[in-house]
Image 1 (cartoon, each protein chain N blue to C red):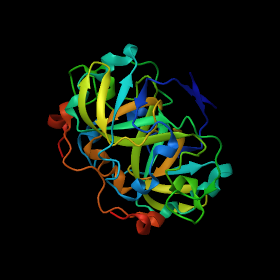
Image 2: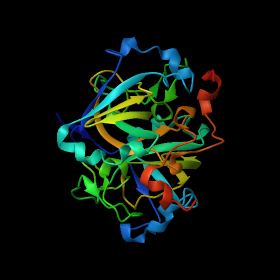
Image 3: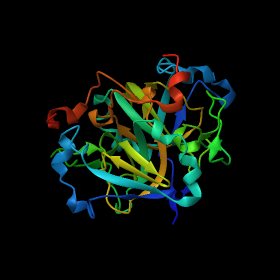
Image 4: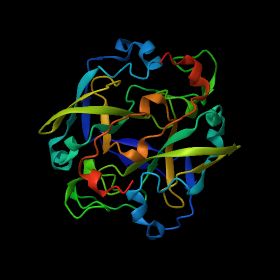
Length: 151
Length: 151
């Protein structure tokens, strides 16, 4: 069984390559909050953006397009211990799909200005969805990540 | 540009077909919380589940495999007004990928017992990720959805 997906748009980011991302930012739950960029949705899909700016946050599903290969046990950026890849947010995973929640700043036509960008320039977007109260979870346990987070 | 993904597992759900899902549940942010099921991860990927039960919640990315076609303006389950598809969680979207946050109850080998299931039996899983403090957003605006949510 195989599924084929085509991008609906592309991320514009101040990070031009992965080395531009300070990995320390991942240890701060608000580390990427100030990082602004744009979601450019291809014009053929622009109509689908109606009503989107009523939501504070969007879930962006994207492809880690620079990722090659994966290991089931992997060392996360923030840790020196091998962890199961599905207990990490590593870009190197069986299906290299990423998920980031971004804040909507402004929509102009087919471009949405957002903050909270942790993707690199040119990242292909597969989908955007509204972040709703069903996605809000409280009192969460963070497993191995707990001692690595600074705030 | 096209991306190909293969499932890493399959959802086991009390909902055998989409008609089994009471759509009123979507109007309650905790409506699916009691719904238990299993994420069966194929054995070749089982090693990747190490450390996963340290986290309270998992983000599940899956394929709406029964979805056919989409409209850029669509009537959501909870509304009678046409909305942009990207401001809805409709299964009928350009890339029919779903995202649901589930609570981890217990892991046994390659099977993870979870609650919060809103997918149907046999749903192909593309990825699972730990839900972290970066995914927690507060004081969110819910756009058109606000008046539709009962709690």
